[in-house]
Image (cartoon, rainbow, N blue to C red; front, side, top):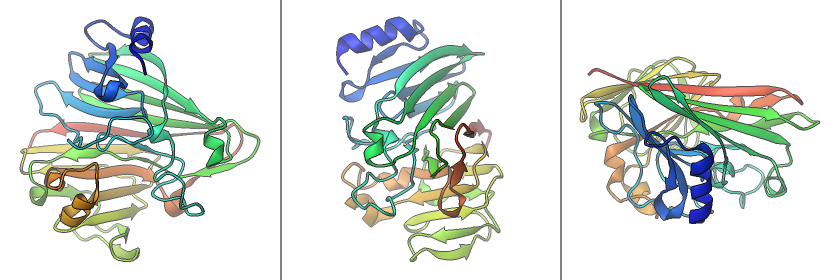
Length: 302
């Protein structure tokens, strides 16, 4: 996006000193939030939240130092939006991983105060490019509220004449002080699919502790999850609505080295905990129906 376009977006939507639209990394347009309750940022590229720091706290989200900031490539870290499929597309190995909206230029609709925070709203919808990969007619609205809590709402409307079925995930990367000291609470006794072990079904017992490459889809999960971070001495509480699966991911040593947009040692300071509806929990919408998935993240005292 050129400078003139960013300047025009800022003129139309920006809130001076609180939430201007500026050039971010790679010249990509972003909204830079500096509200009373929180700082943060969200890019139009992918509708991608890349920062949230509640007042008096450390940054909550992880973004790789090796991330590519360019059109056509997903940002590595923050909160990528996976839609309308998760992972690879089952019937098309050439399709982009995790769908196409995380590399789409979203349309900025509004920036408005929300108490002592700010809500940014963006949209994207079906067109000739999306129909190369997926035939459905749809409209996605994304609202990100940066305040003492980070509230993310992804709402899909089926604008076509046929039912559609889709997967979705808010692929949140959280910063931790040291991954071996992190504990994910709230998933004990839930069944999961272990993608590092030939998709075998397993059952979680106790907190999730990371000691090797981890890629799991927890099934039927609707309860809040707590990330206990001994390294940074904080807890994150992640609640969600209309999400029935939770993905937990850490690439560990070898997978991290194999990722060109991820630092070799960055696996030590991140974990993904993803509100989602994937696999057998994919969502079907009739024409005209809407579905909204929501997450609410807050930092609580250790």
